[in-house]
Length: 372
Image 1 (spheres, rainbow, N blue to C red):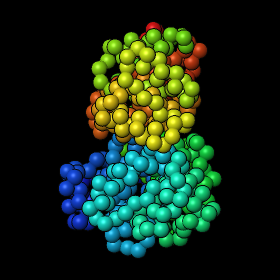
Image 2: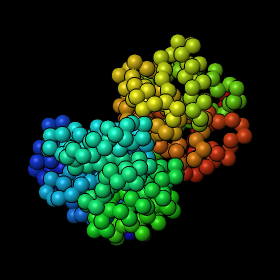
Image 3: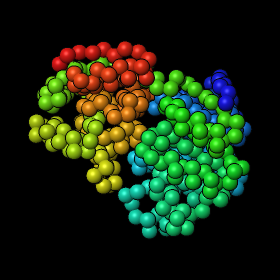
């Protein structure tokens, strides 16, 4: 693997087709982000890529535009694999802003929705499949979908997919796709498993890194409060009073998320919850309500860390530190998106000093620590 950097000032100069450039202009996308500047010229040459970038940097179009460019000119389909239902829906929403004007159709295959309804959509014309590995394998086993015409595949948030145990499904899916394909892999961190995927399933992958793995956005202020476990609720109430705007609160467990949300409602805060015990429709209602301003506070488990793309989240609160230190980066990346300012406050108990050091080691800088 080699590292490369490109400089460009417009989508036209990156080699994107005029039709795609026009489609981008209609939705007022005229300036590529750094990850798009670097990925597009190489991806348009059908080369395999490993992209390391912070969340909120424009990764979806960095892999989506080359996929659409290819599919407009060649036979076959594109496949995007993601770790969560929320991220799948978010990816489809972003791609459809462009694909909808080009006649390219998408299909989303995720858990929590009817297999029968998905089979009906699969049978219709579609060009891009967006799926979680588990549900995609369900369709493969039932022979309701074939992957032998997939020509370009993207693994988005690959580290998270591996974290939650999708490694075997990913490997099986890659083995079912024609070997003569283009593979794009995007991740915020670089665990050893990703090196193994690159070695076994990619061809001379070019590594593009717009920030060191584990790097957090520059404009996010980060601090940690050391507090007793039974004082977290009071501290959260104080912080919500001191900060204006929307707030995303992360809980380690779904039970904790329910309890936090209930307590917030009892003291007058409009709040909703997202976790694995909520149905897909409930999760979508909570996220849509958070986006629209119906709910000021959204309480989530890590199931939502990679699937929430909401503009203007002013504050992220880690009510509990994450079990996986790398999830810290993804959680706080929900604020300070696209170069905006943001703030992240984490709660830690006195016996979690080691966890704090692990976070500091990952993000390569000390955290401002306070005692509550």
